[in-house]
Image (cartoon, rainbow, N blue to C red; front, side, top):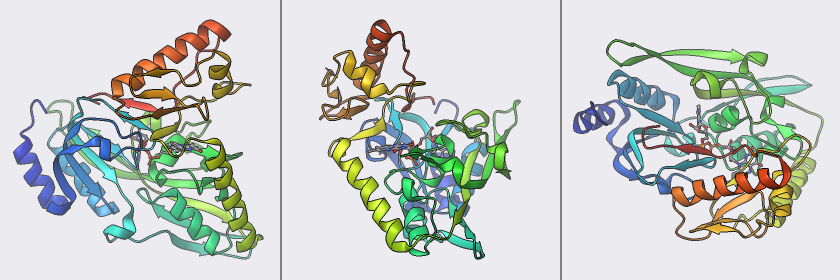
Length: 327
Ligand SMILES: Cc1cc2nc3c(=O)[nH]c(=O)nc-3n(C[C@H](O)[C@H](O)[C@H](O)COP(=O)(O)OP(=O)(O)OC[C@H]3O[C@@H](n4cnc5c(N)ncnc54)[C@H](O)[C@@H]3O)c2cc1C
């Protein structure tokens, strides 16, 4: 961090968030499912809304660069790491926060709230246990509520936008003169969340999702919900290279086609740059076959896009997000 004293900032974060939640020189390869990325100057584990707010207030108040993550299941950090503070929303229950909460219920359904760091799978299980349907598709998506809302995560015909009716956020209000910022809390409801395919308003406004409300329905037995979740997860294991580190589908689905089909048609299944490889099992995935660097993954993504464009005229858009050492 160029203009920020790391030692001083560490002390402030430790005081505001609890020393056990703040790490120096934390390897980001341990915070992402791809298992690549150099160290973050500072890492804060925010297991509940209060710690998250305190971390954001402190980092923004000091004018330090920061980047918010969930489970890192859609991310590639630079090999040089991140020059600033990485704030990780992590599973609340292990760190003293409440799990998903039943806010209201009637004969038709219920409203469930979950902290942004809660695993999507935990919200899906919570719903299943109460006979609430609508999140079966999400039980195998390895992200958090916050990352899921930002990405409008989806699978097997379901998308979070179908049940997320409202999301709470923190916005950083910048002071352009001295480069610092203060936090402001708010909420977006319904269409204001700007959902479309793998997109939400949060990708444009830069707000941090602190939690979301899920509107779920009754009318399906717990046994049926469980059976569907098991079946979808069986299909995942069968089709996807879950045995190797990755960030899921590397590319968004192009209109009227599938990225995996186009990549395979270009003869790129198994094609590799260093330790990064187009999966042999599913060409839509890029996997870390061992020792991959962020540079390998980026070079492979570029090579795949170029070749597919030359062969089919389709320019694939990456779904995975690359984060440079300065954000
Ligand atoms: C094996 C595998 C299978 C996958 N299958 C699917 C699938 O079926 N469908 C699907 O949609 N995705 C899938 N993914 C991708 C990934 O799980 C989703 O994109 C998920 O929503 C990312 O959540 P995350 O918490 O890991 O976010 P991260 O990867 O940590 O972050 C992703 C982006 O969200 C931002 N972000 C994270 N938390 C917040 C927050 N609270 N507020 C604001 N911004 C935030 C980050 O800054 C980053 O830009 C898969 C990934 C893997 C590894």
